[in-house]
Image (cartoon, rainbow, N blue to C red; front, side, top):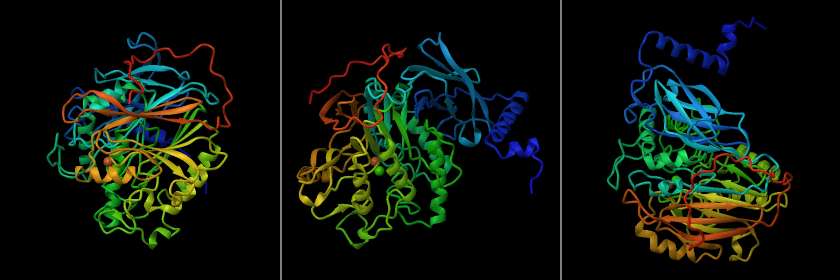
Length: 535
Ligand code: FE
Ligand code: CA
């Protein structure tokens, strides 16, 4: 049964073997004297993500001709990276090389380890004699630490045609520790006419998705936002197709065809995000995962698109009255595996704060007898189970953060939504607005009137674009809703719409390590002062 394990068969079956083959291809090209990098390659900027206490993922993609497939020759290229404690790179603490993999759009994902906890760094890449812009990143506090405070921002929905990324320009200057992006990073649709224009008709294949990401990633405000701190990125529907559910797209295309499209979209997403994940190998790709800020906060990052049952009770508009299908226990938003993972993650986290970072509105949102069937209202039995887990004594301070809907909101997640708002509160839901994507102006007034009348909704604003900043410590989480004046001009002021304080009712079980007497932070970000609590 056992066969001799030659070097060839051993390497061929391993990731190392694939990497060796890639390096050999890159070396062969160099020997032939062809330019490995035919032009300035860092057109899409740099990024970092998924930090731990000792490690972070550094990202870039070589794309001298970004809107036309990237413009790289069809071979892998060795890219050098450096991590320093200072902006001038006098004190380089880690360096190495990572492949820009041709089969992955010459994207680079370098997992850098051996870093110090709770420390800011600067990083850059070089390839083919070109040097990248410099990014800033940081590690998290170590496990057990729940006294080092955290300032994170969350954002979603950045339709490029809808406007300029004035929100990102401001977000980048505010000195956040971490940004969570909750999806709709790109929009897949065609050109249309608005503030800006898309670069192609609706995208459905890998080359077109790549070029669409390159359009978005070419935006200098978005690049600045990525370069300012590490991100944790998850997707929503528009990274693939509007309102898709599992294997079903919005036009009910044949499943095989849609799965092919999904594979292309998922690969292009991976190629453009600083995620600590292996690349996808087809249409099935697990991205749900968690991030920890010591034991002060645990982020449970969900995927509410890939595994969900098709939307129920719909007549096409997705705003419909309930029907019997909602009582079908087999219908799911997360899929059984992810639901079990979330349940276990919440119960075992021990963190002071448990942030469920996800896409669609969790709280019940009755709209005059109708519900948005794309939201958790369309999956009520599973929602009840997750709410009951969050209500458990073993889960400290659950907070749900949400994107998707292009409207800001604050809601109380209740133990029972049928009691007119009198049931005990289980969690708080913070719904961000959008970076640029619009809420229908036709329905703005009606939506605000109806939603603000729901007893468990504390705030709603469908009219302004922006992001949410959360200041977290052992005692409270303060969510500050930042709104820009405009997205129709390249620059804009930003202001605070509302600040909402959530007191911590429970310290969490894992709070064991006191803050160090001397801080290990070596390079604090050059953050501009942000006016706080003004609205
Ligand atoms: Fe959106
Ligand atoms: Ca969406």
